Length: 128
Image 1 (cartoon, rainbow, N blue to C red):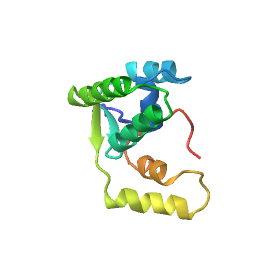
Image 2 (image 1 turned 135 degrees about the vertical axis):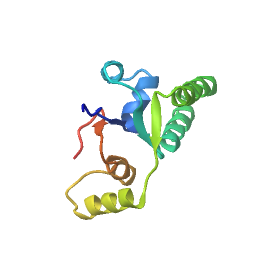
Image 3 (image 1 turned 90 degrees about the vertical axis):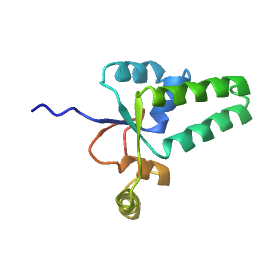
Image 4 (image 1 turned 60 degrees about the vertical axis):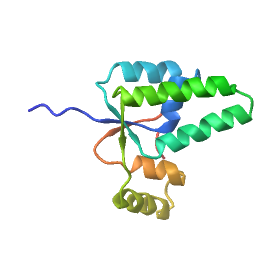
């Protein structure tokens, strides 16, 4: 039996899918080559909303553009392009272990997101 490879898109890779950035083309090509759904964490929607709010605050995009981006993201979730993976106590434990090792530059949310097992992480930057 051929097992389907699972992919996880962290928020830093998800955002360039919806707004033009240096890595947007690479992310779009990667996503076009994989079979949906792509996993996102239950934190992704909150991080996504935070990024939209920051972009509006910094006057990088307008409220109208933020609403369009947010609505498109929610529509993609409803259509099955992305599937949310809830975080469990094991994810928090794994993140804590990584951070306590002091051998990683991961921040709290990045450590939580990277702890989702059974997938290949798509990120614009390699994990450290």
